[in-house]
Length: 356
Image 1: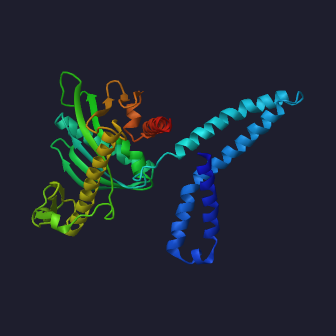
Image 2 (image 1 turned 90 degrees about the vertical axis):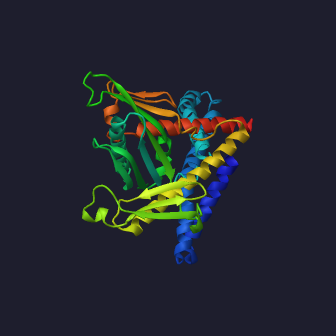
Image 3 (image 1 turned 60 degrees about the vertical axis):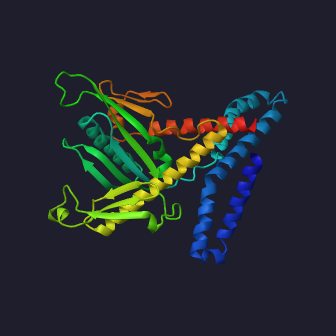
């Protein structure tokens, strides 16, 4: 591990020297590539250097223990430095875990009503607002690609693009079934009802990630329906794209422009096809290792929102928080952080088992 860290530090220094070269500074593309590689190593190198400082401090303190005049002070230093050294080593192990290649990507967020009818559609709208506020806290940009309203003012389905810094790394744990327990506004007996919605978080796929052949597409145009002014029902601006080999269908009618609707639909289609390929690779790897790896089965219920008790429970990690009112305003970070920590712990255990 430490040989690898030393190589990373040497590479970091070399990249810094390269950035000072006139030929790199005068080549915009080379400068961008070099500075990005330098920046990607920076946090790990800084933590490694801090670790080496702590290790030197521990080594010096242990050497002083043999001196009767210095023994007491050395013992105090060791009591302070050794836990810091252990924590620094643990942090470095996490930083050296294989990175998810999708963590830096934007995401396509898809939320759909499941069981529960109107109540489920209302919860779709509320969860989407929760994610919008979470996105605002991270200064991410969120754009609705497609939505379908319900008769009671909820959403049967909403598809959105979220763009920003490392969006997938924070949002990927939201995929799955979200269950809500509460008394619907239409319930006269005060009984608690249970409804469910599904959330899918797909890393946005670029053209280089998924090659879509034109011959594999069937593109249909139709008149838009719903709000949008007089032109909505009189022009064939809505787009439906079918990927024939996989029978994947994507529709978009939010824009008055057929071209814009087609662009949005293609972004969603590419991401869905990319997700299918990711799942295929995931299943192959799981079969090979005889165990599930990664995010697991997305059809499982991952979370329960209990409004009467102001309680949220994430069933994957056994986390329960009695602050649902705050969470619904977009304060999701504590849950996301706990899921990331659990994921890292599992990877460390798997890494340790493989090493053994």
